[in-house]
Length: 174
Image 1 (cartoon, helix red, strand yellow):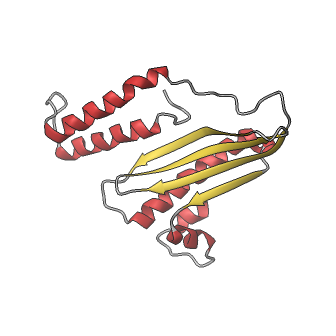
Image 2 (tube, helix red, strand yellow):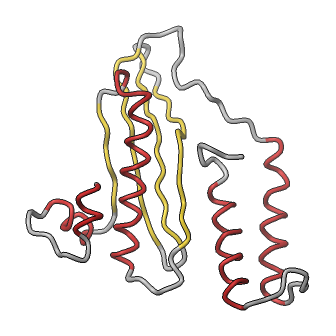
């Protein structure tokens, strides 16, 4: 189980492969061949060392007082998937700055082809949902939250007061 999404970069690759396998209509017990088999073996090979990874769950040190606490949130998309990730950045009174991964979410792109701007918007939607969830827990501790989206189209949709009806429900949620 990975509720905070620390394994998202690996899990999304498995989900993309599963989507490809479903579109190929392969039987469950049919062995994988060629490129699909190489992809699966590559993912499993990369998963091996993860058993030794330790993820610190404490976001704040108790020794020094916090001067500034920021949440930096990012979303992005490709033809195959879209994602959101959130980091916490803490500045302490001794000048030390620490950044930690808080959470991430990923989704496989729909089978029906979507434009990249549309997928970028879907990434911004899951970013908004993730931020809402995390802020319920950390709101009193956070001084500032920054949302980073690299799509000018999505920024225009979000900041514009006139909505295109195709994206209105997503923009309203954000």
